[in-house]
View 1 (tube, one colour):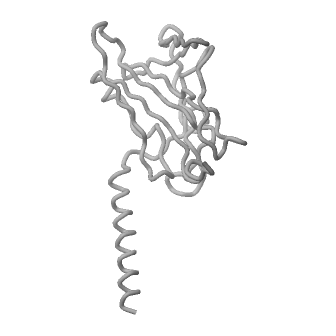
View 2 (cartoon, one colour):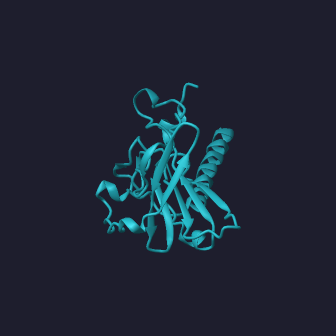
View 3 (tube, one colour):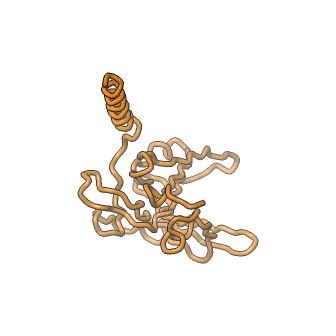
Length: 193
C-alpha cells in the first residue's frame, strides 16, 4: 500500500514538474491564424515595385519567388511550400519533397498545422501546413555573408507554429531567419515506417 501511494505521489510530482517546465520552455504567443483565413486584420498590399523577387534555378527547373517588404524594414518570403500537402495517401507518410518551379507567391503565411486554439475550445489550422518562411535584411554587402538562424518552433509536438515569434530584432541585426512548420500530434508522429 505504501508503495502504491509513493508511486502515485511520484507520478503526480513528475506530471506537475513537466507542466511547469513546459510553460517555461514553450513561451511565445499562441499560434496565429494567417491573414488569408480571414481571421486577422489584413494589411495593405505593398506595391509591385516594393516586392522582392528571388530567382531559383537547378538542373531541371527555374522558379521566381516573390516576397514582401515588411514595414519594419526587411524582406519576407512567407509560406514557401517545402513538401507535398500531407493529405490522403500522404497523411501518415514521410514528407514528399516539392521542387519550386514557375511563379511562387511568397507574400502570405501558410496555415498552421491542426491544433487546439489557445483556449482549447476549437480546432485551428489545416493539414496542408508544410511551409517555411525566410526573412532577410534589406541589403547584403557584396563581400559579406549573413549568418542564418533556422528556428523550429516548440510546443510539445502538439501545438505551435512558425508564426509564434517575430523575426524583426534578429533581421535588423543582419541575421537571416528561416522558420518552418511541421505536422503536430498524431498526424505528425504516428507513422508505419
